[in-house]
Length: 165
Image 1 (cartoon, rainbow, N blue to C red):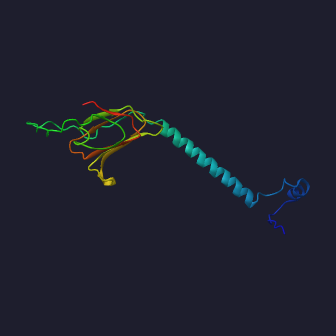
Image 2 (cartoon, rainbow, N blue to C red; image 1 turned 180 degrees about the vertical axis):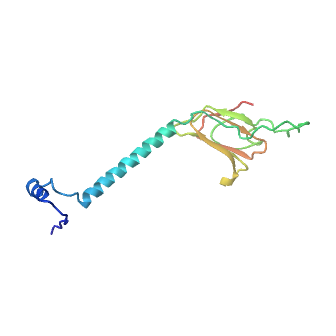
Image 3 (cartoon, helix red, strand yellow; image 1 turned 90 degrees about the vertical axis):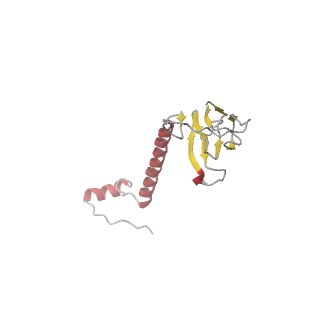
């Protein structure tokens, strides 16, 4: 059983509807739903394209200094002696500062593969997110200063880190 909408029609539109077939038809609910779905998909694809353009325009070089420099005190305190043989180059992993690696400024050339280079300075070796002092995710070269007071440093998907100072 077909249901027809009761729209007021003039003589001209009645004759067009009878003679043409499709010329006088009003859009059905299915057609409106299809059109709305197509428009929604176009909007989603457009937004994804815009987001990818914005991400690709971001700066590919990532340089971060985690602690701002403070004014030197009148008598600088002597740094505690560190054990000999601490690593000054390292790859992916979690390292305890002062035990595995020496504090200082380190650089990497960037990601080691397809993923962006990620690093984080930690208060300790636990996995809690509140332990993160500073972190970064970037595509280009990165520089980070690891402090004496940092508990650990963790890096993923980065090329080898080299101590520069």
